[in-house]
Image 1 (spheres, rainbow, N blue to C red):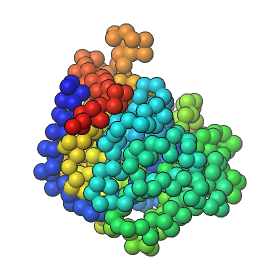
Image 2 (cartoon, rainbow, N blue to C red; image 1 turned 60 degrees about the horizontal axis):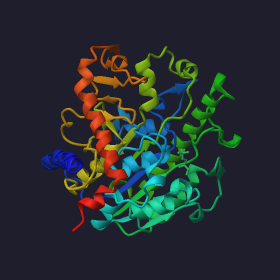
Image 3 (cartoon, protein in one colour; image 1 turned 45 degrees about the horizontal axis):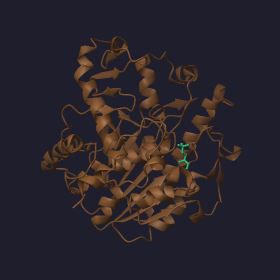
Length: 409
Ligand code: GP9
């Protein structure tokens, strides 16, 4: 009952936002969502040796909504956690992945909700269908079709599989023939650790970073940026661009834990709060038809908010769905909105709370975001309790298959 009530309260928050002018403004549009492998926010808008690292994305920002304080919420399940947060609006587990451990449980999700509203739903990822137990999990999430590696021609070998440029183009060949409206979820792979690209794909002059993992990472994200740019051109050429909500976000950090190259690249020393933000922030870019509402947004959000955001724009109520998140694209940002990370950290844009790593409450930290300085930990206390509750309720729902239980006739 406690879990049921907690989710009902979240549903009520979303219900109240249904009077927002943006609720249903994009009813019936296609949805194209891209999850970018290990793509962190700190590269957006940056240059190296005079060359933009993400020129195509930077250009796209002029006609899109860019959320610069958007967080990944992943844990040990990495890419699968990001997928689950984005498509089912639930927190990851503290250990392992929901995709592996609870693939047979019942979930509310973006694909199932859209399917129930007349959408054709597809997921594209050019790697082995069994990885992260996707074959099974995508049935659970009720996609119509999962296009895995065997649906693609490996005509551009990069890293583990197919290069993102060809991956997007081949996915587009399928999408352009699909019945509309459709929901397409695309998961990239070329910028996977350890980031080394074939030589003919290295087009960024990374100077002294050449031959280091950090330099390889910059080259990889530069290549992904080019692939995304070509995908956008193709969407325009196929007449899908202004008939679709198009968005992309990064799935998780790049696992590089040596801060020196980051400091050299960004040209400044990094505080603990800077490091946390670099580690946890991924870009979220949302292109609405006709470039509506383009601009830079500083309200906080996380992957868990993506499904509620899309459903809000399409005018599909999620009040009765078991989702943790709330819509980000609204006329006015939701007051008191928090992003909760799996270790119990949270931020509301004003404070950033870090739980103690030794379990001793006196070692918890509360940062004032504006000044970047530590502040009175009591200012984070109530928020930390709420954050902890969110994690507990999400865990109980997932582990005990409570959606099935709640819907039993
Ligand atoms: C593989 C890909 C990578 O299919 O999604 O997952 P990751 O290792 O980043 O969690």
